[in-house]
Image 1 (cartoon, rainbow, N blue to C red):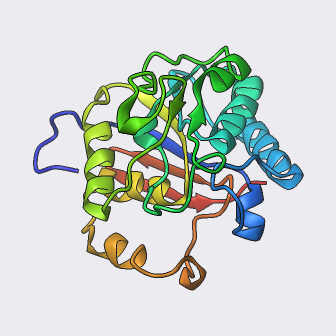
Image 2 (cartoon, rainbow, N blue to C red; image 1 turned 90 degrees about the vertical axis):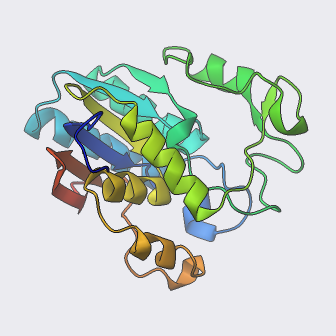
Length: 225
């Protein structure tokens, strides 16, 4: 992540959201719900973690997309880990013609806060009216890959060195969190996401686990469901 150990996170458990409706069809809004299979994947993963992994001391972090919030809700229900919502771990957003929710609208803030009221929303930055939307909506700007990786690195540098985090993210953000955390050469991730999605041959599985401790990867896309 850097040449020094300042701000290095010592232990993170990264989970990609369960199968979503968009994962099945690659059509419609990117901000889709989990499928029935996705719910089952996450539930089984949560049960496995509860039985096979020491989750004591972990702090939960969720992307604000609906599928990650739903994934985090199931994890919280099974493990009792408290979650905060942090938009810095959200998906890589590049398409001008792909709104987060419905045509010409962004994420409805109150809807998410009410639906997942047990989560900590203090790090949600959606009420400032940025990008020309009303205070009740949030539309994320398009990003370059460098912008995206810079966002992920900025997030990781802000974590406490002596804490543990369970982060629920997306295919791109989970991969970036892994690569930046272990100081991997980021050239490969830039090359990968320059290709059309249908050409990806090494996608991180839905509801799979990445475990990083002391800047070393213990698990990568570990499937337990």
